[in-house]
Image 1: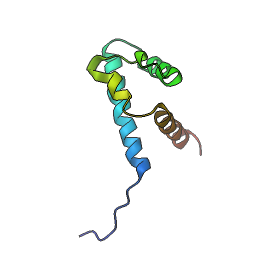
Image 2: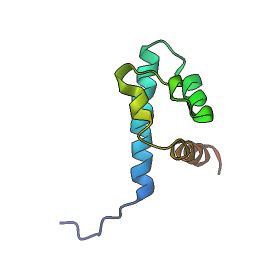
Image 3: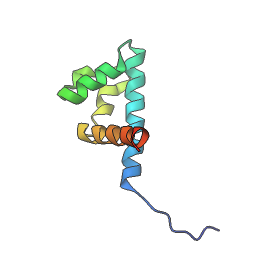
Length: 84
């Protein structure tokens, strides 16, 4: 039996949520023949949800989280993997 107390981190939960959402939206955009990176950047910069396809309900899925939360996770990931 493990007597250690589990540690819950909101950061971990948000990271997982953003990863799942971006993965679903990326897949839907790719299936429809769009450049997923360009479309996601367009959405993140402008806030215009029409950059995201309705295919597989991707437009609704991406709006489950705020754009600033997505950007925060992207920046954290980049820094964690590219800066000492």
